[in-house]
Image 1 (cartoon, rainbow, N blue to C red):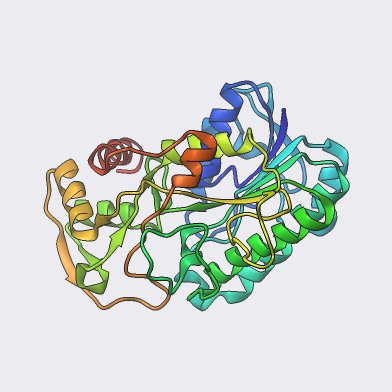
Image 2 (cartoon, rainbow, N blue to C red):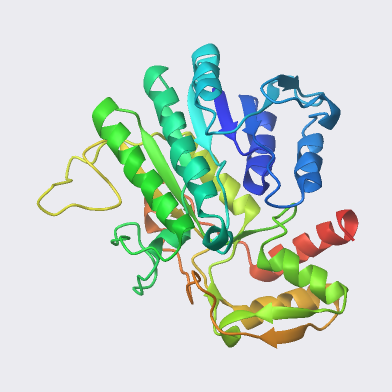
Length: 349
């Protein structure tokens, strides 16, 4: 198939691009390469897939030197004319939108960035799909949409109307926007609620990267909520496997759905939402211990209160993913952390 994959200079997009390319799909990769974090890491990911940094120019295609079925283009999602022209020219079979302004804490200081990219940009993706016969749109949502919900594990059939960060609100908005386009125009859409993704080539603003760097430099690590946090850490390979299965299986409408008792996770329209998580919450202190074990070095811990926008715990109910697509992530945290540390010591240290 011919697929538009946005966010290919990013952590998940980079790994997914490699997987799709290696199985023979034709991929157009897109990324704005913003400076939310070190752009050199983004360029390094692109170079792994054969995209020469020196040839990247805004709005121009770069042919991969490694994969004949891969072209990359630097574009902003909010660049409406360029995005709609790209759809009209390339006529994609499917789209996977992973590009977004990420980060819960960053949204507290830079709210307008989230509206530009995650709302206006996503609308451009939807409009591109609407007018160009796209057969399936899969897109990144986030576990952060669960917000103040305390019912564990988090289920896609739970109400998620109480986000506690603008980032989370933008992701919930994406799900609402996608449903509208699925209902009005029959576009199959699937939202992917990722749970704390980690692994090699990960984002430097995430805890694993920050903790590893600080421990190696004998600097203290900030441990929020005094360590009383749990996260459903999900290894990157498991995330990619889940996305590929979703892309290959466009949703159909749920014939049992009713407006008298509406199910938030499905619809009469061709719309679905899935959690992709390890379904095994890890205590933050156990996570830190796994990093210490992999590094052979103890952390200096700076205990702090819960930060604004953070939730104390996440836990994914993946029963729908398992039932519909026959898949359940299962990578052990110690294995995943060890793989990350091996990569970090090779490429970053």
